[in-house]
Image 1 (spheres, rainbow, N blue to C red):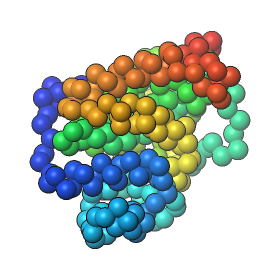
Image 2 (image 1 turned 90 degrees about the horizontal axis):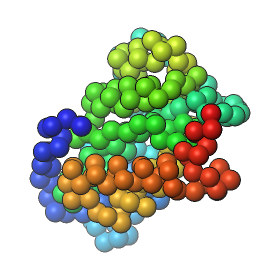
Image 3 (image 1 turned 90 degrees about the vertical axis):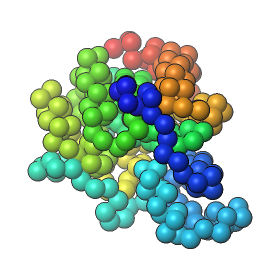
Length: 249
């Protein structure tokens, strides 16, 4: 992690906005299909009289958007080529057949950071992850480079966010002779295993421990991903851990 991220002090939001962002994060994790209208109505039901414009701004700042298809959900990068979604109807039968990645918002006591992770679809094994204070491309490239030191997948799937459609990111994949797959616009369920990972991370660690700082987040996430890979049993893996399945390859 960059030194600037380690010593980062969150920009000051009002106490009310910090509380609203915490509520929105938790509700989004429960109902990621809620758009800004439903989120605004939900906050009204919790006693917060906020307008939709404010909710939209806070969700955008958090990098959260509803998963149902709608136009212009993500801003495409500079890649001149468009890539189709390759996984529809595909049978996932082995490790390193498909990897995917995503970015999520991680709240801190005052402020927030972004978490990017790369997961193997067959084993649910987290190959690499990275934390950043900004939504730039560099921390995604760092995670990708570390993952590619472990193995090389046949297909790499992502959403159409600017980080993953950038020339730098797609060139890394093409240089490794990896087929590129992009989700449909706004279709987070095309990347369902990463969405399930985010729910696990937040409900099993982030919300329980209430990270205080960037350093605290990095330390706790490192411990959690070690637990997730090495100890956490998955019913869908016949009660094996992701590491047990992945290391059998």
